[in-house]
Length: 78
Image 1 (tube, rainbow, N blue to C red):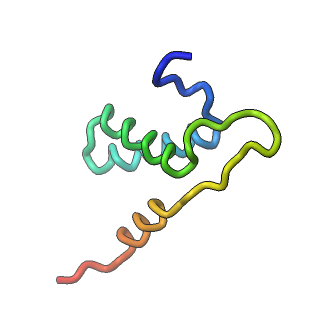
Image 2 (image 1 turned 30 degrees about the vertical axis):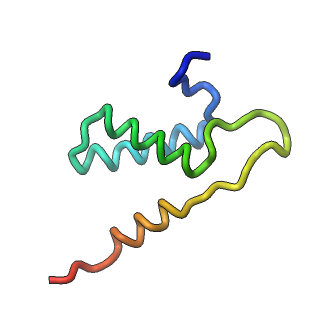
């Protein structure tokens, strides 16, 4: 498996990265940088690629998503 290959990621992880990437592109980030940041976020939250087999999963950490949602939802002070 080549470095940077996404074959070991679940479809949910791939979908999540795609959605995060769209958000970065909407804000004006370049495609390459948006993709890099999206996969970095997915790796941070899920701990990398999902391994096959029962009972080998780890609970995800959604702290960064929660923080971003709170920041985005907060009213601006004028």
